[in-house]
Amino acid sequence: MRAARPGEAGVTLVEMIVVLVIIAIVAGMIVGSGILNRPDQARVTTANADLHTISAALKLYRLDNGDYPTTAQGLKALAERPETPPLAPNWNPEGYLPEVPVDPWGHPYVYQSPAPGGFALTSLGKDGKPGGEGLDADIVGRK
Image 1 (cartoon, rainbow, N blue to C red):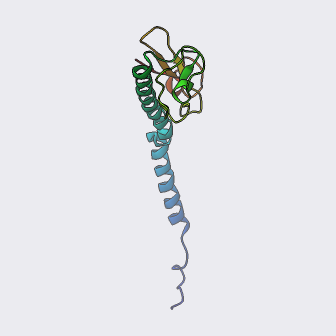
Image 2 (image 1 turned 90 degrees about the horizontal axis):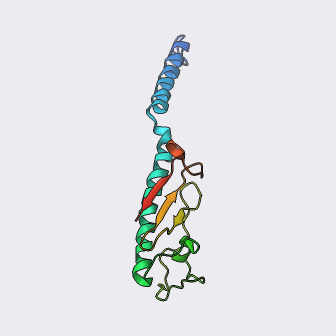
Image 3 (image 1 turned 180 degrees about the vertical axis):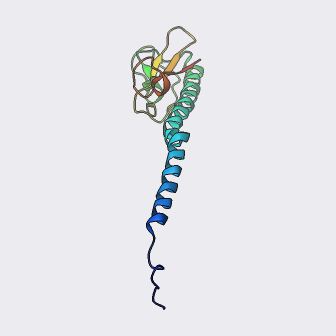
């Protein structure tokens, strides 16, 4: 191993500044491109997929029992046999979903059975409140 000559040892201040500028440019590109928003976009995609899955489970429930669960019975009727009328005479012993679902933000999905033969299913978005814009906007799935 040879000893370093004067001027060869270590990193110069100019080299360090160049590296820091490159890091700052890359960080700016990441923040500016919206890569950090990907988890929120993934939650919206997951909520849409959940709405399709829950809708399919509701349709199977209707095929077996003649109608959708009432609003009072809610989505719980897909995971546990309803104990309030109208009872589900042909309820699948394995259930239609393994558990009562919640949206990707941890809020319950809003289920309404407004008329015979139909239902409304909604995720209230990131804020968990009706309405909103952007990530707070409701995500609606209907039959």
